[in-house]
Length: 232
Length: 125
Image (cartoon, rainbow over all chains, first blue to last red; front, side):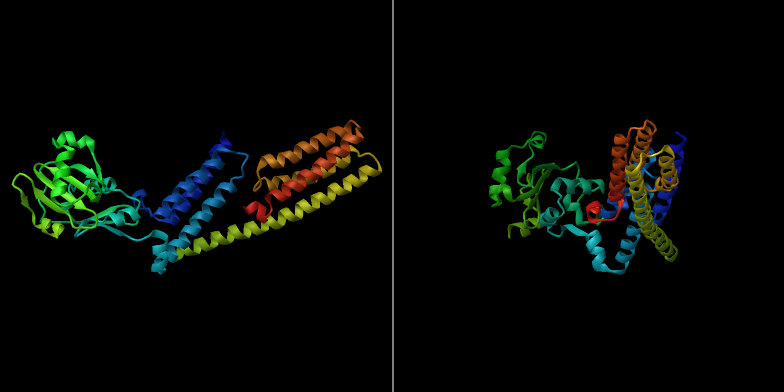
């Protein structure tokens, strides 16, 4: 038992040295390759701590090598923009003046639900409230708010996401598929062309694929300014 | 940054230097070990081994074993210890045929361990 305690203490000291070399980033700020390093180091350090038939160097050497390689890669990244892009990727705009950029989402292996979750985490409940949204290289979202957009009075319900009806929300919004399909026909849109359709009170938000989003107040049959762009 | 860079360079130099030293030390020691086993095998072919001859080789190995424990898995090293034990048993019992078998086992175990941990393509992949 004493052997395990001493070995754990030694490995802990080397981990501490390695983490000091890595810097003081928090989990949420880690770049993808740094996250992988953190996971690998945890695994590498564990085995020699508990298995006394393995030389302690089998834990220390890989940990130190990984931290040294990480240091060199970070140093190279700070010198070369090309290398930085290669290692960390680059920020991607997922919401622009036209609304959701589904092509960028696809490249990021994200879906509309992931995006909506991210913007809700940033305390925005509607795509309209966002002028630009950027997925940073560490996976976090940065948002430039649309100060002209109205704040939603309630949480917008997604009725169509990526060309598919969200059945669970239909009942809550008292809307039928037929209603929505006939509404889409009036706009010359097909179901599969819809990236996102949400309702909130009597207001509908429609994000067609490859076109600018539009909003509409259904009760008054009044189209918003953005609708002009969409129908064009 | 400069201090960290110096630290990284020192750590890298220690690791790479240590790796090279280990490789050379292992190669040298295991070659010597194999030569000593060959000599033991030859001596056994001429006349049956005496326990002192086995003990002499075991004592030599014991000194090396302590340093190898720092960088080789203990289970593999204990394999050599067990073979020594079996060899000593056959020599004490004056079982000449079994002793021949145990000498060969020791020889192949040492050769296999040396090959298992030296730097070669098969070990890297």
